[in-house]
Length: 469
Ligand code: BGC
Image 1: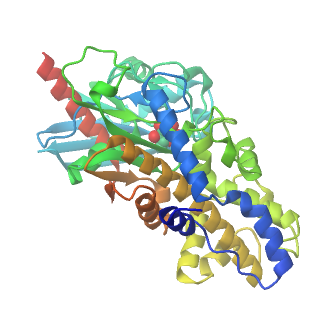
Image 2: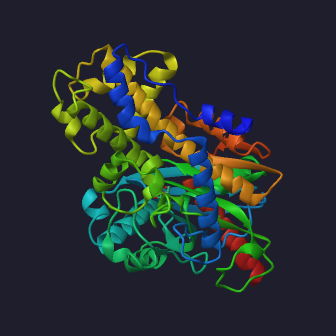
């Protein structure tokens, strides 16, 4: 017998069944998609596994969660002042920002986006870092600041081992980057060297950070209870404020720090097989179609780089099995990577509105003219995939809240999936509450933590440096 609270959880996480007049067809589709539905018991099991992996990671035992010390031991306190450069590398665009902080608040912001071609993202590391340094020079010179000493915070949104606030040894590339010769190298040193080789600016790289860390810090300027930073974008990850005495990996001398930000790197959750019990055939195909096969298991369940492809794999299967688009299997839908996660957000908007305008527009891109049943099935697949992603994220957040044992926690969130998907935030609020009813939490949107947060980290790094001098 399920206890009432578990029954409520179980019922809340179930997407309503597909509504089709043709019973046989409906049943066939439900049977194929049943593997994507998670029960309350499975949700609890994932919580247990996540908790155990977090504990192992923080105690330096083998785990799929890195739980990396970021060496950021304090939040902004409103005294941050000055002109800072920020670099943001993680998505397909590379951004350089000039930010002026007064009393911890950004009062001026100049931003320039630079596209990074696929050959730079997936070739050797040298040309990539040469290009990053070239963009920095181009930006600084265009601002007329080439003779000014500029402290820089580098948002490098990939898993890295940190020996200090200004080292970041790349563990593995993720998302759309894969320059193999950079793995195990210090991305900060590569950047510093490339900037020094040009010698045309006076940029001083002070700190490296993850986008989740930047988001937490940016959130802290909006709400002092902020203690978790969460990214739901191309990739996904979270960081949180941990008690310093719980953290074993701490290389530089300690100076009485009470807290420190830990980068969980939850994209890799399950890479050691601990999550295999939820892996579906569609996940296996999604992984096989990705740039870095057999890695970043959890990220492939939930993030913007992969959700669209996950849905495409399912639609293609249903179509090949004669259950969808029965007039013809659309060739265009067989193309790996053709179904963007933003399409899911649009289709989900239709589900919310009880409409099919966006769904038809999206399918028109694939030269598909759907019938009424096709529309329902496509919307259903998008709902199931999105809902599973939101539930998985909520499970990890709820477990993290339990682990932190704070009175109240504000979670700063950023990322394209979170911003564009019409139901993610609601589902998260609902599921986290059901998973951990005693915890008080709030989700806030921290705009551009990966940019502004980098300036804040550079300012904190300067403050710590001065204090220790
Ligand atoms: C990276 C993380 C990052 C996340 C969100 C993941 O692929 O490993 O470091 O925080 O993407 O950008």
